[in-house]
Image (cartoon, rainbow, N blue to C red; front, side):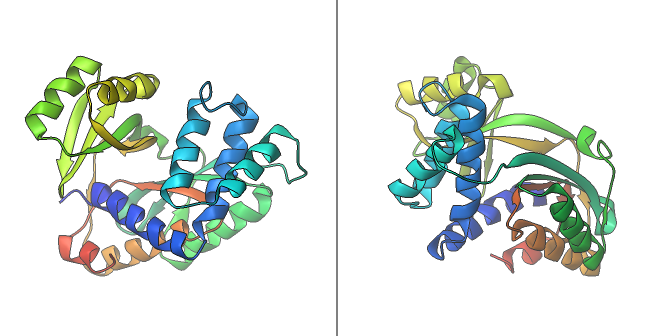
Length: 246
């Protein structure tokens, strides 16, 4: 079992649970603010904002929250200045970890991220220490279609590959092709659940036992940090360990 892929599915389940308690709204709002600041407030011409709004709707974020975040990104409402940062490090067993965060205080955030790594048997590294182990890709999650049909449609649309794991079907694209492939799939009647840019590890490290337990606790703690948007790691762990945290 590819642990990193399974972990992505677990993250989505956790995100839905967090949404029930409103915890995810802050993270989604920050993404909307940054996307708007960088690309404008029109989702039709700003793919990143469009994906952020789709994410907001998927976790039932109130419409007024979305509109308020867009206005803050445009400078029409007061708010703090957010910056995007990437942190890199190693977890137990030598697992490479890449973190995307949005913060209003880089010094505070890096200190807190370092503390989380140290507490759970990992260490925060220098910029570039693990990024080369990951590839930036577009991932489109779909449902309601058989694998052979999806493969034919996806490749014709310009996708690189498809992946099927635990009944989750995903189309893999080059980053710049994500939106065009998504439109092509929808044009063929494919039910697109989600489209996002992500990092995929080029290889994985197997961990088990105590190291795996520490690694999963580290990843969970990072995910729960308010400034952290996404966590990526190149690991495989026994299926039963991952099942235990769903």
